[in-house]
Amino acid sequence: MAIRVMLVDDQVLLRTGFRMVLDAQPDMEVVAEAGDGVEALEVLRGTAVDVVLMDVRMPKLDGVETTRRVCMDENPPKVLILTTFDLDEYAFSGLKAGASGFMLKDVPPGELLGAIRAVHSGDAVVAPSTTRRLLDRFAPMLPSSGKEPQLAELGRLTEREREVMILVAQGLSNGEIAARLVLSEATVKTHVGRILTKLNLRDRVQVVVLAYETGLVRAGGGAA
Image 1 (cartoon, helix red, strand yellow):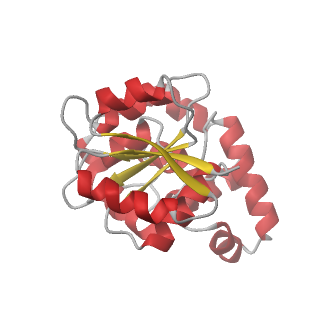
Image 2: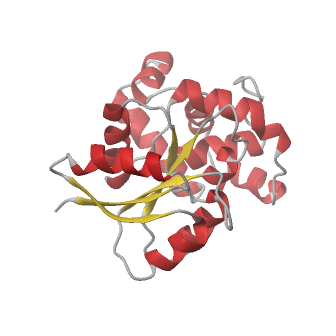
């Protein structure tokens, strides 16, 4: 069954370009479009969608709030934030709102298609270097809510799990973490799974966000 994709962006030409690329794939189908967040929420009420490509800056209702409302549903589609990075200081908020990752709007078609497939399969799309730059730039500007309870939750982790969490937040892949800690990649994957379970997090994106919010990792990517 094809991945059902919805395009949410106020730029018609951009939606048209994405639709041409996606509809050319045998495993993807653009089933809906919207030019702003309000329209997107209305369309989603009557359309089955697997992955939403969500712009950040839109009229009426921006991508952050739209993402938050979408992710509040019982069985929400996956949301992939689209950002220009240098202009969109709201992308970090989009991750906090429940998005499974973000991509730059000028991403090569192959990377966009890979990201859609990854998100649909349940993975988070975290481009390490871009993630660090984005968080380092904007995390200090965004207030954290409930920081004390979050800090207490970190106490559930073992010393090794905290170590792995810090490296995940710094943008390392499982393979890179395994090499750094002299562990097998399977062991690292197990640690990451336990971190997600203990902290009630959905994916690696939320691990990164929590690590920055609690100060476990400082802006600049270093451990606190």
